[in-house]
Image 1 (tube, rainbow, N blue to C red):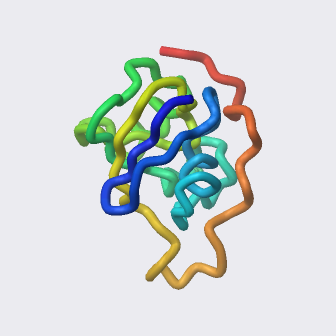
Image 2: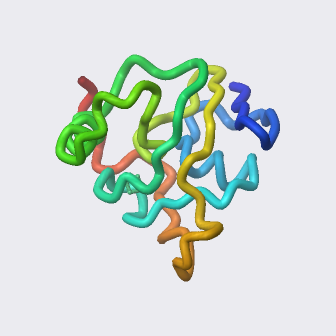
Amino acid sequence: MPKLTVEEVGSFEVPAGKRLVNALVDECGVDQLHACGGFARCTTCRVEFVAGEPTAMTKAEKDVLDAKGLSGTPGLRLSCQIACDADMTVKVVSRLAGTGRADAGKRPADAIEPPPEWV
Ligand code: FES
């Protein structure tokens, strides 16, 4: 099982292939935002990679990061568009706490949505 390390939170074994956004919530206990429900629209599921950043990216992630001017930010990725298939270390940079939102967003499905087209 891949190891997911969240800075200032801890290290956790996560099921191989699990969506990073859901692993952050389920295995790591992080109040990670995911306002659009995991559809690569809101970018609130963003994390900052410290190590193990995947080289592949979904077209949906690339498009929304480009549209919001976030593509140039080193290590910034959308956790709803990434599967845990290797050890990773991330910083959580978009949590529910302190936002005043009622909740973190609808739970993302188990599989990456929209159906991934890798670029
Ligand atoms: S972009 Fe909205 S949850 Fe990932």
